[in-house]
Length: 477
Image 1: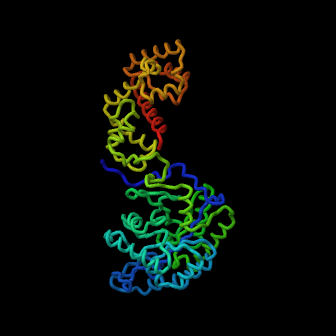
Image 2: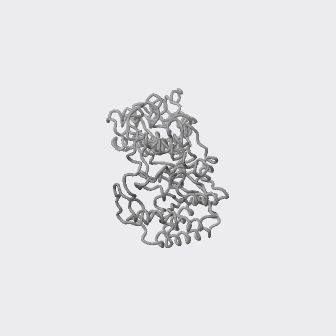
């Protein structure tokens, strides 16, 4: 196979699917509380250095081989005070906890409170540490240990997974080891979507780093609660106006649990409460809803778009690809062959995407090769049509414009104009007939009759590309 581009830069495309949230809600709101306190980097936990991520200490650096008193006390605030403030505020709402397994194990009272509030407790991995350089075997073992510890501490196996500081293997490993209802290690969309992993698929519920209190702990962040509240409200209002979207708010006990930020969160929730068409739900409930209303399958494409059975465009072998798309450019399979050899990815699994790849291949062809494509097109209402020797696509296209039901005088006029055009330019008159009716085609032939060959050559190539696009759009995707 030629190189294939694995990233999906199209996703749901220009028209996202209808979410159909319960009760006719215009927006699904997911409140996520990260519980990491007691699971962060610490030599007490067997780590090589102290924590340096997401705290009040500007420019914090890991202290190799040492404990960091100030950093530890900041994390301890989250468990000792911040959690309880947020629990009092959110205890009546559906909340998803991203629980680091070792942090949960060190906080039995907090876990009991989470369970009493009937919050979903998803897995946030074994430890709140960086995974980017972790060998795959080590990360796989950590996921297994996290699952076992999570179940032992909470009494249930987690339905959701979010590592956060992940590697390029994390989503695959979580899928293979945890088989979760959803994975949230993505920030790629405002709606759930599916990814293929081997012969199976995994539902992704994208998380957020913008509507997230972590912005208080980085330079490109919020200076005060009012700024954060404004951002949350603006995000909510935009998604609510668009309708059918999901909003996630990311919280941390040691950050949003601070009094000044907690008040901003309270004001945001008051704003939300003024709307009666909001579905506040756990991430597991959102995932179950998505699976129920837009079920997937082992053959589902990367972006959860509706397509026919079989492999997606970048997954097709050469023979299958050319067999399906070789006739898109009339009698010119070389265009499909060159498109297959190019860098294809998930974004090409659509009429628009594949047309872009095939048009690039056509335009890159030699002058003579492109001319042969023009010459391969039949005359409109010509002898091949009369003899029933057109391709199925050409037959359907000419019939759609009524060219199969011409009077004798109309047929004679078409044949005269065709003959004059070919004699003048050396290739047949080409037009995307699905864009026109019989009278419009005749008028275009008469209008273009006096053009010079260079002008008509350029127009004919544009029409060939347009015909190809229409043929692709008529296929099942």
